[in-house]
Each structure stands twice: as C-alpha cells, then as structure tokens.
Image 1 (spheres, helix red, strand yellow):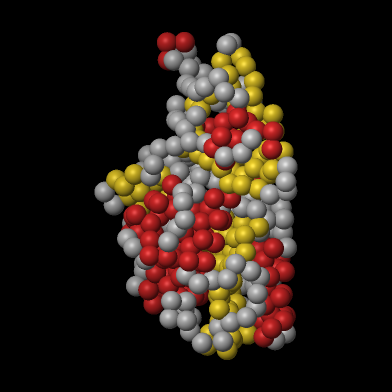
Image 2 (cartoon, helix red, strand yellow):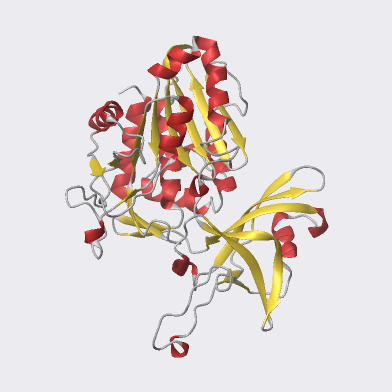
Length: 411
C-alpha cells in the first residue's frame, strides 16, 4: 500500500489507522514514509541540493528538506519504526503433537500474554538469490492458543518464552512456501528473511480513542511525517534544515547500523553541514525532538505512577523528564517544546517516573550523546504499551502533529 500525500492531510483517525494497517513491519513503515515523501516531490537520493531528499536503509528512513538559503542549523525529529513481537527464526517449520508450528524468537519487551488467541500475520523483507529484496506480508496464517481454563483451575499456566510462544500454523503448507507465494517468487529463490508477527485485526476507533498495534512508535513516525509535509508545503526559500529520522531496532537497544546508536544520521548530517558551514557550530546551534510514546496513567494501577505527574489520554502530548537521563530532556530543550506547543495551541503534560518504579528509555539519550545535539523527549500518552494492541487518544495525535509542525516551522 502506498501512502498518498492527500491522505496525510486528511483526518487523523483515518490517516494514522491506515498507516498502521499498511505498516506491519519496520521495513513496511520505512517504505511508506519514503513513498509519501516521494509523492510530495522529495527525491529518493542522498542529495544536498535545495528541496527534499529521502533515503531508506533497511527498516530505517532518513529525510531532509534543504531550503534555498539554509540557516546553519538542523531541526530534527527522531522516532523508531520497530515494535515488540515474535520474530520468525531462520528455519521456521517444526511439528509437535501433529500440529505444524512456527519457530519464533521474542523481539523486544513484548507483553507475551497479549499475543495469545490473536490471528497473526508475518511481515518483513526477504533477500533473493539475485541480490534483490522484497517486502512481504503473509496475511493471517497463525495463532498462539491459550490453554483452556479447565486444565489449570488452581493456578495460571506457566508461560515460557521458548515452549509456549510458538504459534500454530493454520495450514500444512511450509512457511517458506507461504512467504514465497505472498511475495510472488519461488521458495528456492529466497535465501534469507527478516519477518515479525503483527496482529491481523485492523485498528479500531473507540469514540475518541484509537486501538491498534504498533502505536509505539508508529504514532510518532506518522506524526513526524505529517509535520514535515506540512512544514515544506509552501516550499520556503529560507529557514533551517529540516530532518526526519525514523530508526529501526529501538526496542532492542538501538545498537545496530540502522538504530539510533549507529552512524546513519551522523553521516547524513555531516554531509549536509559541510554545505552550509562548520559542522561543530551547526551541531551546537541545532536541536532534536525524540518522539516516542509515553505512559498514560492506568486507572487500575494508579499507584505505579508519580502522584504529581499523571498524563491522561486526550489531554495533550507528554514531555518526558528523568533526572538520571533516561530521557534527554533538560530545561533548555523543554523550553523548545513548550514554545512549539504554545504556537500550535497544544497542551503539554509531563511524565516523570515513580521513584520506586523503573522507567524505560528512548532514542533521545542515545542519539543526543552520539551527535552532541540538544534533545527533548516527547510523545503521545498510551495505555497498554508493548501490548499486541495499544490505546491512544485521537486528539493527542492531532495536537502532536500540530506541535511538531510548529517546531519544524521555527516556533
């Protein structure tokens, strides 16, 4: 599915839901961002000429807008395309008790119980014998079944990552033949694959809420895409160099060639900086937004949250702060987000972790440390983060798009 420019300027419910449905893997998400930008006139290259440029590397995508008369600084929005799930192993097929099953490896911090009793599709990329690669999505073919309650009346069943997370395949056809058929190639032509499961159920609007898989962090990828398209719509001749960076592998630490800990963005920025001035001065004068989903207060587990910082759905994007720098926000970068939010008319909520409950982290500290660019951590609040299906507020997403647009436009 190719994402049209028109779709991205339509209502948030449809656009975010469609983007998620079309992006069951990091590779699909990166390709969809590229396609939307190419549709809007971006060149698919790593050029430094005035105008838009976009490059896909694996499951990561970089894009930038170079004005005719650029200021010597960058405005960067970084996010990530990957989400927790069950990744297909190289030799996926095995049989147990007469069932054909799939050998999978848990990717990232998935809430394992949420992957039971869901119709699963497997999506990603395959490498072919001729040196090319293709994106593929099998459609719903597998399921991890729960144990019936009659067989464990006293205690919950054990949940072992190796033994109990292997899906049952809904056909006797070998998995590589299923993948080959979905890709329109011969099974013998596939030499390698990177495939992860996704919930086959479509996103659903629940009044003012959206339930969907991969909201962490496609909500931020999509919002940054919308913001970049809006910011360059009038083709400004003067202004800052606008950059979108959507990395892969955040959920497993970012220490890969296409992760925020790798050289992908650093190399691109160095090339762009060489066109307009001294790279060191440019980096010091630049700024970056680390856009990643935040925790909303859970009404049934409210004691897990700090008593004075309690983000709610549809009350505004969340500014994330951590004294131990699990988030990259400081006072100066917090002010950057506050200005952009004020210009957009968007409210600001805060997340600070409960002192007795460890918090996660983001690409923010990793990317800012590597680049030396001041960074602020923000995102929309979610419930059920890292579940197979998460929950967000539609108004939060609209405000997030507006505030990111204002940031790109110089507010």
